[in-house]
Amino acid sequence: MANIVAITSCPTGIAHTFMAAEGLEQGAKSLGHTIQVETQGSVGTQNTLSAETIAAADIVLIAADTNVDLSRFGGKRIYETSTKAAISDGAAVVQNALQQAAPKSGGKAAPAGNLADQALAAKAAQSAARTGAYKHLMTGVSYMIPFVVAGGLLIAIGFALGGIYVYDDAHKGTLAANLFWIGKGAFGLMVPILAGYLAYSIADRPGIAPGMIAGGIAGTIGAGFLGGIVGGFIAGYTVKWLNDTIKLPRTLEGLKPVLILPLLGSTIVGLLMYYVVGEPVAAALTAISGWLKGMQGSSAIMLGTILGCMMAFDMGGPVNKAAYTFGTGLLASQIYEPMAAIMAAGMTPPLGIALATLLFKNRFSEDEREAGKAAAALGISFITEGAIPFAAKDPFRVIPSIMIGSAVAGAISMAVGAKLHVPHGGIFVLPMPNAVEGLFGYAIAIVAGTVVTAFALYLLKKPVNGNAAA
Image 1: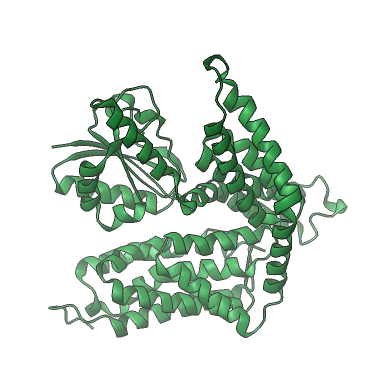
Image 2: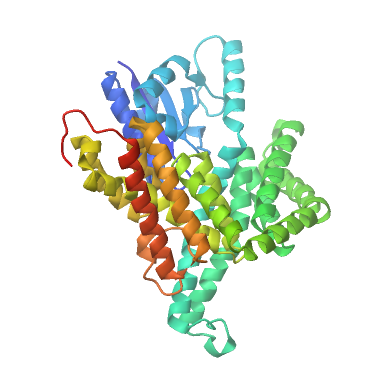
């Protein structure tokens, strides 16, 4: 019997984090192993692993879509995978971890065994952990989301209390105006945070300052969130290269992370942003913004359809997060229609499944009908991952069904010109004044997507054996 410690983390820290933890716990239990899982979710770290627990562990299992600090696990065998793998088959992940876990460099403890083999294994493992543009981007997004959510809601509350001209001098000093400007301040930090923590994922702490500076420059030169993403990647890889290249005497090594790397990295990246990257990216963002603002008719419907399909395709995976990042990034450019389509399309998969379990009971087992109640709660909260258990069990029928429904929701939302000023919250933000523009049409989009999903499931899924309920 093995003793395992694990960490789970996803970009939004809402659903995948805890579903992955549950998958690992069930998988370890089924194989006769003990496991303790630390969740690094949106509410902070829970079930924190103590130094004693880590010391007693045979392996460390990381199921995360963001960068996880491994400094606590020096000398331990570590296995890294995605949250989706842990959700889909926790037992297989645990089995693979026990067979493939390898030591990591970093930390104070020295691994046992042949030192040359350990060094090679650690270097290869660290290299593998540091690759993947998606993982770096999602780390930046995970730190950015709270700023976007808080900023969007505060701006909406400010408008609700002070009207649409709350930013005028006539409202200066009022509660409504102050809330509005607090929200604008949070939005102003959005791109620097995205770029800074993207760079952190690549280069660790020395990358934060150059990355945030790159994000700040992106905002001042009109390059927006696209410039922040490009600047974050440039900052991260520049600082990582500098760190690997610059060799100093041991007595001066302490200057690298606090002086040399931030100074050189910020200088190089800042100049690149001003003289090389900024203008082309700003032009690209201007072109995209102009295209989106001018969308009408069939082009708007097509974009809504595409975004809807992306949101439902992997329910919180890379494709879903790509669409979500696209929508949240555009909020800083005051383009709100795609975000509305994205949230509508993200709500309908679990809502449609919940409706189908209620209307078409003979298509679902008793356990699935019970799970449908939980899916409804997740759906109204804009947690698309509520559809994952159903899709994992019957992917070739469930995934096409929810993609059809989400495509309908996204298309209708874009067609009616609905606008969403906040990036999360589900139905709980709908009653808030100025959070949603075109509320009636937006509600129709969500209802239509839900109903289409339910009937698509009825048509594609076969009756469950022994279940004759209508």
